[in-house]
Figure (cartoon, rainbow, N blue to C red):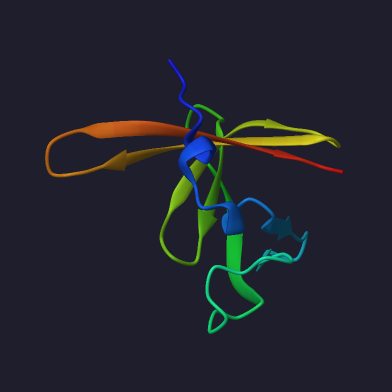
Length: 99
């Protein structure tokens, strides 16, 4: 079962954009509505491809986060990750559409 985590997000986060470059950089832009005027308009990080022994592809981010690539084509990127807390773990699936 997948839950829409964006329905509970602050509206100021819903216009954020994410760009992944072939040179291994990602750029997050806050969009027109920022949650806090003190937040930077954009921030950047690094990502790299990883491949597991069973040939699954992963994004590894400079923050240490690793996300499994479920689908990647000209129009869509779907990645999954597992998030743990002290009492349980949840799987997250993020879908990015190319405009």
